[in-house]
Image (cartoon, rainbow over all chains, first blue to last red):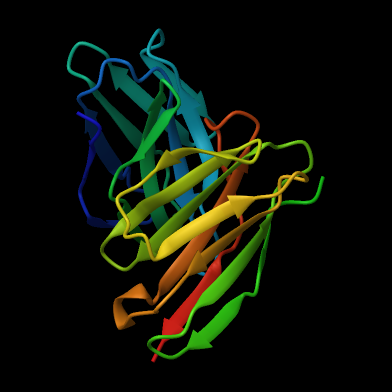
Length: 110
Length: 111
């Protein structure tokens, strides 16, 4: 019940494409869903986050889509760039618990 | 505001030794969490401290321990090092444990 399942493990997309990373959770006590971006040699950094009362949130080229009934959420990157190549982690928090997905290594080819 | 500072940045130890890693959180943050990151294993939660008390603990053996000081600085200790302990150890601070701000980590190599 504490797990967050993230897919795919790795993803390669051409520049300008729209990579999509999916996450699913079980625990209905989770009430905040952040995404973290990690570049090599750095710690993860908060990218964008959503609460379950909203179905979509956009920040620049990054969009989270949230499906509360299915307990799923996803990250879309519009007009992807080589600089977006990084590892992305979804997470779910609630009741003083924070659980991370397993991460997706994204590569954007020029 | 200064970010989360972890020291040292790199560390090489041999099996059986012990190691202490240090983390200075963002000023005002009272929660400090520690994670182990290895290729293919994602972020494995070690423990979280809040106001000097361990609030949450992951599924790691007792060789892994931590503490938090009154100024919110935290240390993590690993005793009797094993080869499998080689990893990037990340510290993260937050106001109340929800939105984490990570340091750049300590890369530990056990030979």
